[in-house]
Length: 63
Image 1 (cartoon, rainbow, N blue to C red):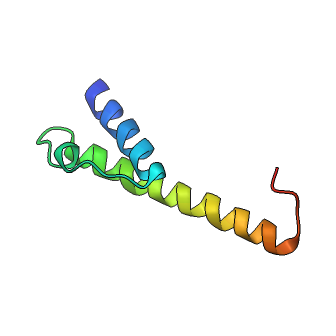
Image 2: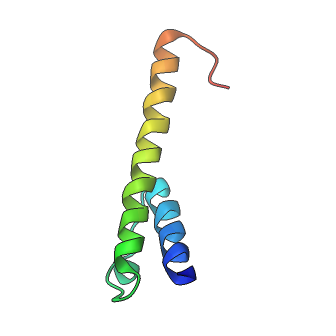
Image 3: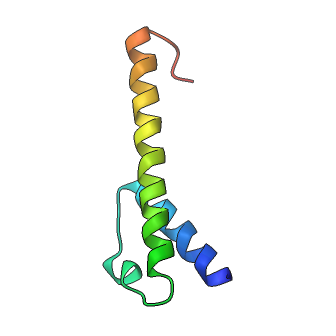
């Protein structure tokens, strides 16, 4: 279970940074956990950018 959580966390960090490791994604034991983390991290990054843009358009303070 620890390996799966570590793979997910690594994938989440990579997804948020716009990266992807083919080696980690193809790992037979933890590849699916990594890929889910990448997808989740990518969604978080998109939501963060979208919210920042909406705030900018509304003239709100980005803090």
